[in-house]
Length: 92
Image 1: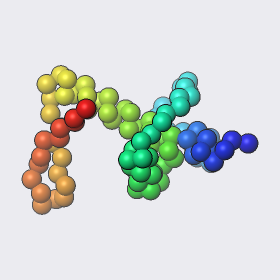
Image 2: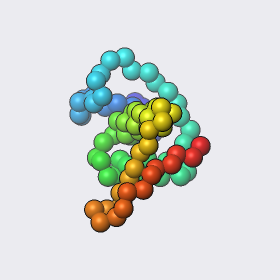
Image 3: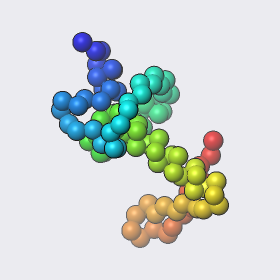
């Protein structure tokens, strides 16, 4: 039986359907910083998704944002309905 950590990270196809189009799965071991681990837990709490689904979505969004910025586009965010748009800057 997998450890709790493995269960949290690996897809659980018996409890809920996989999102993201299916296809071949690739197992990857990732070492998260404490800050990233807390952010992952927060995202899981907010969305109710599994850690696997959350990481998959995060990687896809990151790739999309990086490509958009690389192609000369910009991304803007608004913290709430009354706030002004602010340009998102991704700093590596």
